[in-house]
Image 1 (cartoon, rainbow, N blue to C red):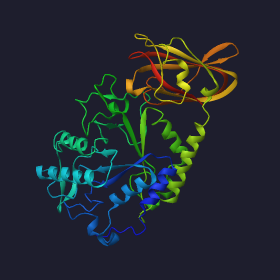
Image 2 (spheres, one colour):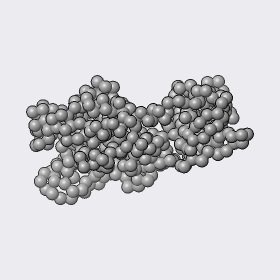
Image 3 (cartoon, helix red, strand yellow):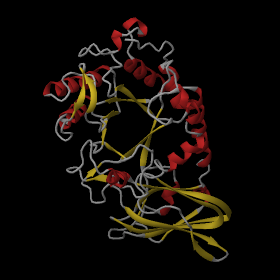
Image 4 (cartoon, one colour):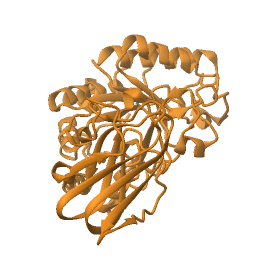
Length: 414
């Protein structure tokens, strides 16, 4: 095999990701082509049978070590579909797939996420047979057994797929969550390869399982590196917009960095990602709640006061009494402030509750609604609402409806 990126440097990857503000990395250890970036004992279609480091390389191990060195969490993506295996579609392939998963879960230390995607069958070169193969995506891979293996071997890891069980695909590859985004799914209905992607974008308000959304998107037009696309890398401003439409809508952002043929993250990719991180930091640097007087229409009592939304401690929160599923927070400043963003966080250990909220600002003795260009429905772990910059001495947040008493951990005004 010709795989031999002679300049491959997982330290460079890790340093770039840290500087770009990332908290973890998920490596595509095997994609649909079936090639393994670790020296698997289960197939010769792996990195040990290439010129890379004279057959002594292990990109999975190298990146796991770089993550430990630079303080990143480490995860793996193991494609269920394998266009190389002759037995794909037969029971023996499922045994092979689960054995591959066991190798990854037991060789490389702590893993924080295991990625199972919904690509299930199609055209391939299955052991030399160029043909189409189809499987029952609900049952073929025995995903419950795979998830149980993860739970036993990596109990701190979460499992990604269309239906979780740890976190879910957001229903598109554009990096955008729904403006309404519940962290619940009806777990008995959703499965890897689930056809109703729009439901994954919003979640299920009546879901029975906590399966929050993860937004995957690539820095480039596609998932892999092509030199001809160097001029099409997403700009820092593009990435800022994606941040507010993913992290700012109660989801995680999973940003794909296609490594180039030399085995490095290209300069334009890293420059844009680092600048994106700088701009987000600048946007959210000065929380005006720290200099505001905070009042609420009602407080549950000592330990649940309105002022706790501004104390920088996620585990303290403003709460209302039982049966009080609405309320208002008012922020007042001694001098006019320029504002354009409001960040809200619910105390997620007690669930996601808010169904509807609205914003108002005070101007010359009158309260006016703040015009927001998207629905102000759900909040969840984090919601960031943007609007045209305005100057005011007071802001009101009306929590109009919720699934239970309000539990608001943090409010930021920027």
